Image (cartoon, rainbow, N blue to C red; front, side, top):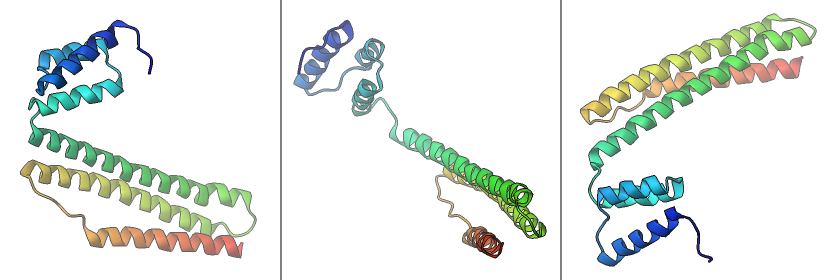
Length: 170
């Protein structure tokens, strides 16, 4: 592999070799200097690993932070699913009837059903996020409400079957 030019690599490589030779992690000041010289994500991962081995990062606090961020991502997944249900509601309840001949009421009923499913997904996602946040603060786990998850899944299945039946019959 050819030698890379530029100050950030010329300074960084000897520091990393010196740290490896001493078998001790780099001091945080050296890590900060490296980050300023080479802030690319590839090298930042190595620098963060050095900081973690140096004991500069509280593992319990970091685990809690990661869990809270995962909880936020889960909330966003509930929202995305709710938005998808709203899109199906609009498509089934308004767009398809405008493009087809025949009775419109079955499409409207299914559209309203998917709209209600979207509202339920938004509501449960927010409720779940708050419940999990409180459980994290107490250091506990809060399992999801299996009955409600079953109801939401069942509603989605019933609406899907009804939509397929209308498409086939139409």
